[in-house]
Length: 253
Image (cartoon, rainbow, N blue to C red; front, side, top):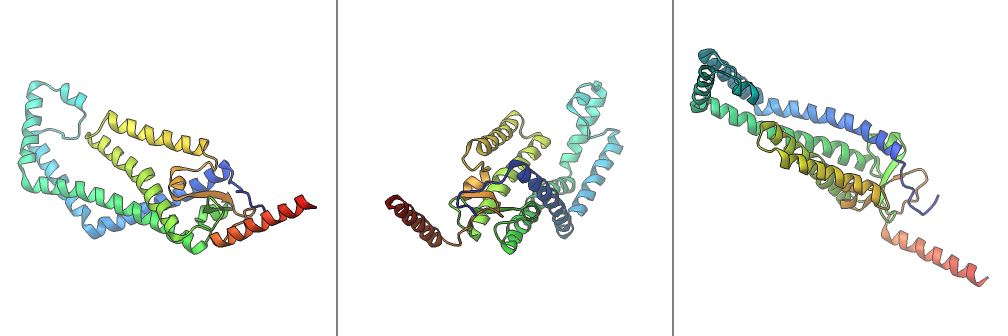
């Protein structure tokens, strides 16, 4: 085996990423359904739907329309829509259901994805060793520190929670939700593009071709079969001293 970093090929990394991403998404959805049931999301959602249906029937309007449709309405239609909307927003029970749906959507999304990441990208790699998810294990990849030493739980946690979950996943998810809800427009799109650009630059310009989460944790994805991995910094230093001694011996002979 070689001491030099045996960086994993991009195709292998992409294949492992796709495999892990699919199963991670399935886990996030499963946790989301579980949390929805525990927190009573459907109860509030159904109550809100009933309120919408009640005022739509009473005022003969539809709330789920685009701005273009609203502007194309006649004055009478627009007055009916505005009256229905005002009546809906004045309904305390409807607004309570709306706020609960909004808040629970954020909670279920945030916690569901977090639990999926903790299981798939933290707990499973701790059990398998070498920072391997199932995807990395299938494609012969591993995760180590940049200096070749086996990574510890804190580095894996930093990589998973601060890097992959917070910066690379939840910030984009929140921005997309705000864009969908109409509370963020061009600024949100620019932030998403900036994160994507930073990721591309990180993976193409760094010596280890590391993504943002690897830069934050000081880790690198390697071909684990051909990579020499040291169990501690002391073991690495002893190996370096041995190499130095061998070089000195060869230079004298």
